[in-house]
Length: 148
Image (tube, rainbow, N blue to C red; front, side, top):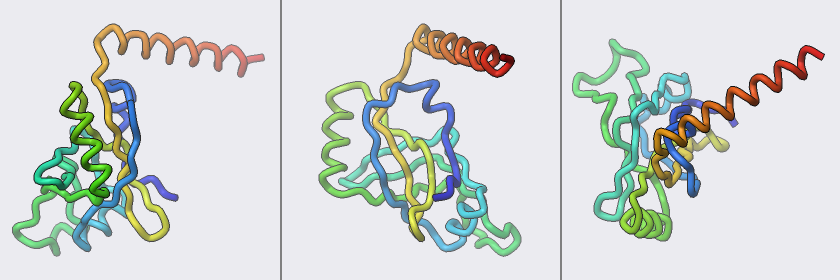
């Protein structure tokens, strides 16, 4: 299982409440570009419209720039393949609370490309400070044990 793209800021900016695995609808050249590791999830989020989930603002540059179609948009909306039950569950929880749905990672499972998405709640500034403080203390402990 290869990791093609990862959104590292999610763990720092958000508190993850629930994870989901989803398929993604891509064009042939986009699949080649993703497998080449050119995808970026920075600033990407998920919107549910009309009973369908879409990945917004995920950047997939063309595989071969000179061979790409003239009207190719690297930031186009990509449809996510979730079950109706999962979509209804996401809509209900998103409406009730101030939650967001964001992509965490893009990876392969067999020959399929999957997107790991999460229902998240934004962290406050003091929560982010606690996260950095905890990360720094863990790093210090690892350095001490490594030196012994």
